[in-house]
Each structure stands twice: as structure tokens, then as C-alpha cells.
Amino acid sequence: MIELTDPKIQKYLTPYRYEKPVLHGSGILGAFDEKAVDGVPFLSYPMLEETGIVHHGFSTKLGGVSKGCWATMNISTTRGDDPEDVEENQRRIARAIGVKPEDMTFTNQTHTTNVAVVRAEDKGRRFMETDGMITNVPGICLVTFYADCVPLYFVDPVKKVIGLSHSGWRGTVGKIGKVTVELMQKTYGSDPKDILAAIGPSICQDCYEVSEDVIVKFQKSFEEKYWPELFYQKENGKYQLNLWKANELVFEEAGILKKHIAVTNVCTHCNPDILFSHRTTGNKRGNLSAFLALK
Image (cartoon, rainbow, N blue to C red; front, side, top):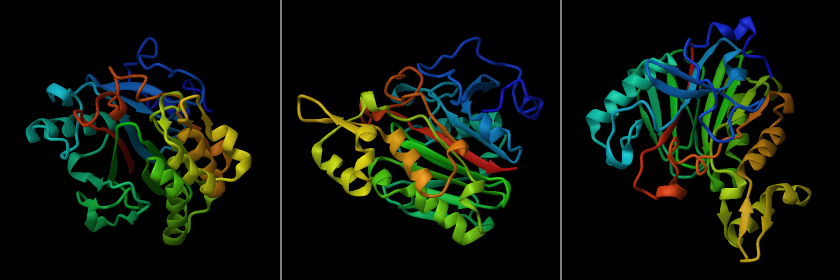
């Protein structure tokens, strides 16, 4: 992992930095950097910054104007939040990350493995029944939404192609990470060995209890030798599932080099004051957002 003192990424760092990590689990080598611009905090991967070709980030609950259960940084229009507050939040987070709000292009996620190719004429569009997007168009900002599910970032610095996908347990079983890589290969000629991939903040294994029917699907999708790393059964008959490790395995299966993979160490459920979590609050909440754009 490149050091934050390296001049290659120093120019991307803002003057303001937290004196210590505010997120439980952050600050460990290989995770991400906590940054803030104009009072709007967000999370950033040094590995992706170091490429010099993208703007990217992951929002928190902080730095916005939304009220009530959406407080304060919610940019999703599907949660019931005040549209004016959402628009202001979009302006704020766009300015912080370095993109334009009108360039944001969204998914309407339904836990599929559908991945869209975003072309210049799609700027500002919302792709229905879609959980991932790829593009080679500079300026277009891909945006996906979260509240415990796993954000997947993809950057090909050789072909200058990016991808962003949403992977809940269904998307992970369906290996949407691999689907995204294969579409980057087919559409733009990307070589998986060139792709940098990051797994974003999401629910950790200790917090993610699932039933046996979910585990059966994972057993069908992943080789038995990986099962001990992916889940374990408890006395109550339920299981604890590791989506982080599962998506890391999906990346490797897709041909991404292990040294090109950054895995989160921050759980959304462990940080309810900083991050939205469905398992913490149910549907009365805003959404976290992942952002990725070619410069």
C-alpha cells in the first residue's frame, strides 16, 4: 500500500485530516483515508487516488442538511427525504469529491447482477433494476447506494475504465463483482490483471447473522475449501456470514491480482453514529453513497 506521505498522492489530500480515526476499525494499513472538504467528510482509498485518473469517495451520515431519520448526508431520492435537502446534499458531496452534481448517474438497485454500460448520453440517468455500472467516459460520476451491502469499486488505469457495483448477499452469491469485470473485458478490452478493486464499508461478519437457506446458496456458489473463511454456525442454528471475504474471492476468481485488492475494515452496523445501517434502524434511514468518476 502506498504511504500517504508519498508525493504521488499528496496533491490529492485535502489540508484537513482527522487527528485520529473517527470510525471504529479504520486507520489500519490497507483500509481507506478519512478526508473532509468544506466540512463534508468522506472516505477515500489511497490505492485508487494513486492512479491519478479518478475522483472517488464514500459518504457518511455527516456534512449534510437532511433532518430526522435522514440526517444529515442523504442523497437518495427514494427514502422519502425532502427533495430540496437531497439536492443540497448532492451539491455538497459533489464539491467535496471533485465532481459535478449534474454528472451523477445512478442505479435503482434491486439486488440483481445486472450491470449497465454508461455512455456519454446517459449522464444524469437512473438505471432501473441495475446494481452495477461501468464507463470509459470522463466526467460521468457513477453513484450507487448502501446501508450494509457491499460497495465494489473497479479502476482500470491502463484502458481508463471504471466500474461501481452494489453487492448484497444475493449479488455476492451471483458474483456481481465477476460480472462487472467480465463486462469491462468485453466492452472495453480491460485485462483483469490491470484492474484495481476495492471493497467498501459494509456490514462485518460479526454483525451479519443469516439463516441456513442463505448459507446453502453460498455453499453452491463457493468451493467447500472456502467455507470456513466465509461462515460459521452458532448455537441458535443461525450463521455469521463474511461478505468481505466472499467478494475478495470473487475478485480473485475474476482474475484480479491479490495485490490490487483493498478490503474494507469498517462495518456500517458497528458505526451507527457515522454510517447508515439497515440492520440498525430498518427502513427509517438515509442511504450511504459510493462515487467514482474518471477525470
